[in-house]
Image (cartoon, rainbow, N blue to C red; front, side, top):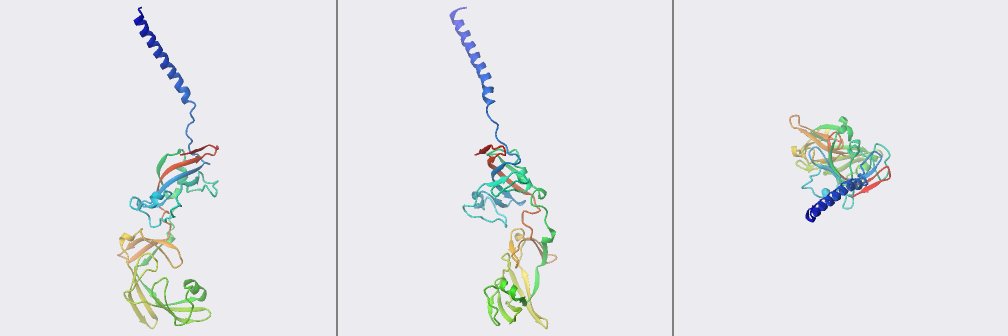
Length: 297
């Protein structure tokens, strides 16, 4: 065999040896790389999230960019803007117990869907009422007539009067603007136990007592039994699920339905996240494993 062919054989053998070395070397190197930390029960994790109602409206988020973007992320009527510096990753304790003042316990369907996730991983999942905020309480769903009658005379015990009208001394003949109804009131009678107030609206007056939708005074009638004010709730279908108000006791409700055939409307005092499927878009920011391992982005 001449020198030319000998050189070729040597080059081939060297190449085969290098490839073999790489083949046996690489698995050894890979075997030393630790697998990523995955979320397990007992871990403390930080996540960013966006929560959606079934209609696609955002009811809560940890992201400031989402909170201020109403065009791309239309908000539920119950959404509450927390402030510029109040949007940070949510700190979650993974499990049904063992949380603290820093890492909170969430509804079951939320933390269960975090199991097995790794840092920077994103996931979209749905939480049903049974694993979320539970079923609606039917006693908190109430129906009222669209047109209702209200006595023009109201009598309150002195303690309750002071709560309703804290800035108005109970002086007979005093005329003041009612902070709830918006019309003028006149104090008609005062004694040590009770205060009587006469409501004095005018026909056609528009009021907004619940800070939700307008009402119109459509009639005022008087007879031997007293004076009655007729009120009409000015409602439209587009308001359903999109209008929130507060009653005179400070309890929040949402317009839940309108039945024009029965001339009634329905309000729901349940929180908007109760009784519905909730969709979450979650990204893991960091993991503090219960084995003292820590991973973060």
